[in-house]
Amino acid sequence: MYACAAPFPTIGTMEETVLESVSSGLAGAVLHVGDRDRARDERAYGHQRHYDGMALRAVPEPMRTDSMADLASLTKVFAVLPLMHQLVDDRTLRIDDPVARYLPALDVSDKRDIRLRDLMGHAAFPDGVAFHNPVRAGALFSQDRETTVRMLGQVPMDAPPGTRITYSDLNFMALGAVIEAVTGQPLDQAATAKIYAPMGLSRTGYRPLHNGFRASDCMATERCGNTRDGHVWFPGVRTRTLQGEVHDEKAFHAMGEVSGHAGLFSTASELGRLCRLMLNGGRHGDFKLCSPETVALFRETFNPDRSFALGWRLPTEATSHLFGKLLPQHRQPGEVVAHTGWTGQCAVLDFASGRYLLLLTNKKHGPVLPDPASHLNTFLGDTTPAGRYGAVVEQFVEGVLLETDGPPTPPPGARGGR
Image (cartoon, rainbow, N blue to C red; front, top):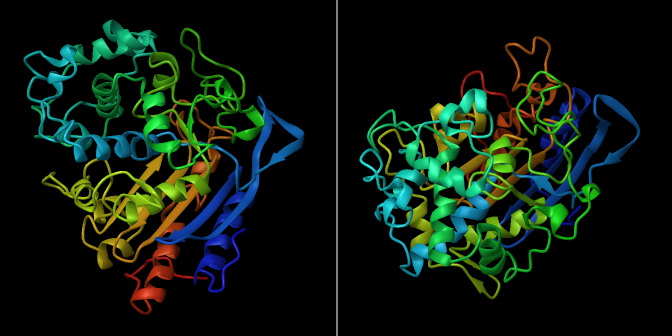
């Protein structure tokens, strides 16, 4: 835990929510709060692994503050976005560049007009293409990375680029491929060489088991591979408890464990440094990522519904189920940016106050809810307060307002401090 003279005002209330969640079925969590200058507090709860398959371990592995989490979709904002900041800042890329300029597979009639900003704003590809599963993918089936990138050009579009907002992993799969095309490096190597190594981040990267780490360095995710407790099968499906391997099926099987949409692992402490990098306008210590103007650009929204900035989610009424109702009342879109990850991760960066929140959990490490026919993607940990994120985010916002704006006025029916 970080010692600090002035503890974050609501850290005790946030801790109560996480402890309640652990007692209700969340395997474990790391809670981390900080500001532009430093980490303010960091605490670990529960276990990073307590299953072998469906059997409880006699001796579970405790969660540690340095446990590496499978970041799932936080990969988008902590791997792809920093690289995009750098490439846009040095004018290697421009946000209005056509993607087909870099990915020949997208030089087809229905994708030729996709711009980089459309990918980052989730205004390009549709969702739901499961390349790894032949039953679901049909002609788009691929368990080979180069084939998958080519297959992006064959994905049927459901709307012209820029006209419909659909959150889709395919957008960031394509962005990762663009980065590889312009840097001449695999995405994982580019991220390490250009961002993580210069910042001294030694526990942040892809494929930890191939890069000197042990399974016990990482939080476990699904207890029976990708089978949803034995109810799902496809060629090559993993059945072992996943620990140190990316959970996401597309990333693991169709993209060789390295993708722009998933695959990154890190700790709360090291992600905190990346948050402070953004909150300080692209600088952290001696490392300069980009100019403050570029950081500001990526917080702008070009979507009519203001749902996304360039890669970041924007906390609005529409996303209050994830980020609570206080943020839209006290911040304009872009003053706060956020994102979540399917395995149980949440990041909130408040540029107005210079504060940030990281909640890293392994909420998929537990039973799939009963009735697997209708709940194959819902695990027990998803149903807990911390697993739903919003309660912890609201308590974080209450603390920020106490420090900066005075006591908040919760909306009717909003959950307050306990």
